[in-house]
Image (cartoon, rainbow, N blue to C red; front, top):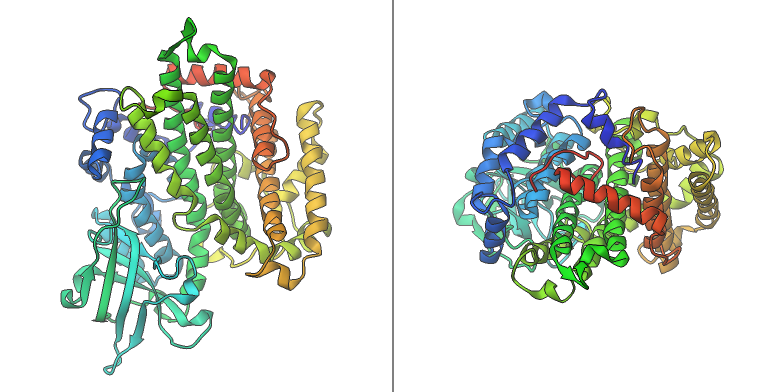
Length: 586
């Protein structure tokens, strides 16, 4: 949102920003070059051609290997460049802007595998995987089985002790990126036949150490979107597991490790995918400005400008929410699981709807295979997995549901706990390092992001639209607290009603509103003209209300026109549309 937008001045002006991080992104953008250059091996023409063939863009993978992308998945303490989610998202968003298949197929899988190891692995396991990744190898993270989906308690892959005492793998994993070409893999498996959450573990395996006669790679799974991503499967038959493979050295911690690692990946992946919407919006704007219609161009029509402005507001809303959640991992790690589930349940549908709405702007020409259409068609397909890949919306809502009653009673009605530190809402500003060991399985009934909404509204001295929005969302939090505090134990379990699931959506809405308003209230001094006006934050909050079915009103002209003007300014200047507002060749 716009003041969420104010973020950009902090970074571009270098106000205490992470200059090393900025340098990495600038270097990557320079390596990618001009996407519109027809002879660029990683330009739009080659990206579309690779998609047509159902292949990863080889030149793109080579570029990312030379850039050392894997180093951004490895913590600094282990020789890498990972210092926090915000920095990682910034680098990976540049990849997603150029080609989402490169983002998911080259990098995201290795990051998901690595997080489990950084969270729960022994020192030796962490060093082993770090060395592999820093050498340019890939890692696969294998949770999924077609027969069980996200229900890990029913995992069919087993790693039970054999007659000689060594664990042996039996079963399969399916629809996993890079399985066939990964040098390392993290497997979620049953290590005890008894029921219960302590019957599962994660295993870190080097593929070279496995008996090839006991491993069979399944045929690649074809997909509608992300066509270049190598989604495969693997089947084990009495495959001996090397000693020391159980992550952390203690069996039975697989579910706990997964729940902790999800707190990072459920924030990071939607944050990365904002880059896809950036390119979709850029592509749609480029096509609309060049398409003649009614004696002018498509963008001369108020409705067209409104659609573009609303997509821009959606992008700012999604970016602000994910950025604040990413920074809260540093400042409120005990609540990171709540904010991660809220982001993953809310942001992907926002991104999907925005790209789909932009497709309507292209009109009947959307179906042509010429000009801007082929790339946009690819992006429309590629955005779909963001809603269910890694974890579905319902699974994230299911993680929030059991925490609602206690949070309502303790965090909202009793107002226990402090608000988030101000630096949480100042993107690009220095933060303490991530402490993986501080990630908690539940939020403990405390919700500092919602407390920040109440505290900020009480301290604000603004009139007009911002104050009205603050009052509205505080009232929504009060209503949510009253509704959620009455939920009984049965109402928050697997058999929960649609009404109860709807409360989690309302909770995510309050959190997103707090992120937007607090980013505005805590904006840095010296913001540029757009960032220092409330049009952006008001537009983002207006769109938030639309996504939550509070209303169906289009963006008012008083908000749509300033956003469209800023959108065109950034387009013409070659700047990104997110909070960073940095140069890009996409």
